[in-house]
Image 1: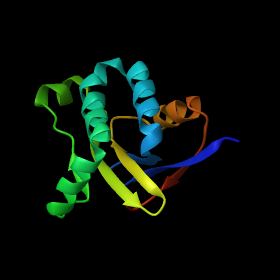
Image 2: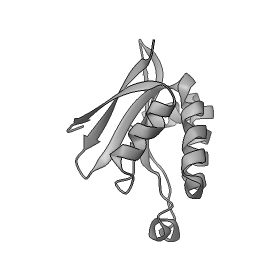
Image 3: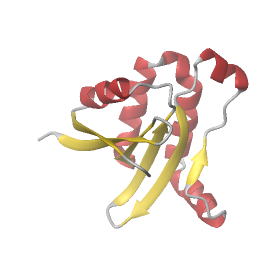
Image 4: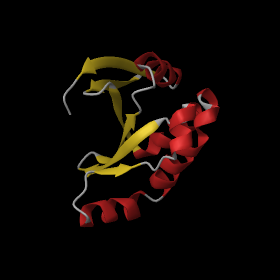
Length: 128
């Protein structure tokens, strides 16, 4: 049975996806295959995923809900930005990571990558 996932298009045309931490590595690998020029962002998010507990505790201590992905101005000008920020979630359902895709990434690209991983994708406009 295919898994369902929601892509939220939020204010500013950012796309938001929340996935279980166990599935994040395969998503990041597929993103790297589809967006090789955005490797820096993907590696930074992979580092956060691998060290979820440490980053979660740091974020909690700073009363932050999100971790901003650092970007060089040159990367932004070259279009090498994939993520704006990530959200770390730990609740009764388990650990999840919320990915805020940069506004330059099309919703169609996000949907295509998720479908290639076997997800049934729904797109909704949201006001996170």
